[in-house]
Image 1 (cartoon, rainbow, N blue to C red):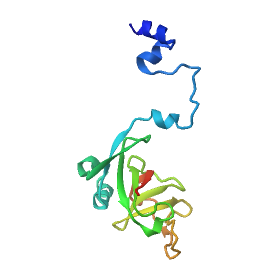
Image 2: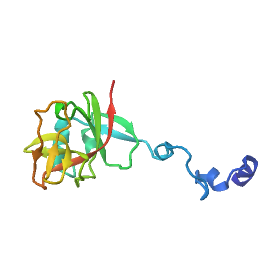
Image 3: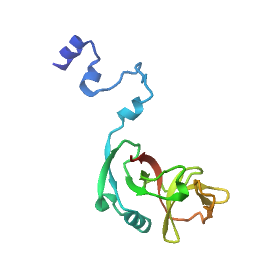
Image 4: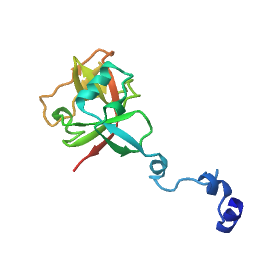
Length: 164
């Protein structure tokens, strides 16, 4: 039956059956890769719960969820928290939901990470030489914090969503 439909619709059978693209077909729109990614329901947790993830890397954010938000991202290990931190207000203004990839705990220069420094959660930009966590603030009183390379990283910022 599908073969007959494909013939009538003048479409490839594999596309009709499974949505597969032919080898010659390419995405013509910039949003195509985004649209093909599946939507996942990301748990929104408290900052207190996020701090627990620094202590127990096997903890499940879904067990701590206060709410969920639909997000498309490349990782399946995500959680979100609302942060209002003046030290990063240039990158993440007030009322921003920040979604973290907690599978990505290996810091890369220039990316933002949620880290636990002396028991305090900090969202900062990671820099390598020397290892430090930098603010991104309109307030010049916030300074970079030099850290040991073994600082507990909870996750890398994957997505941020400004709530109006």
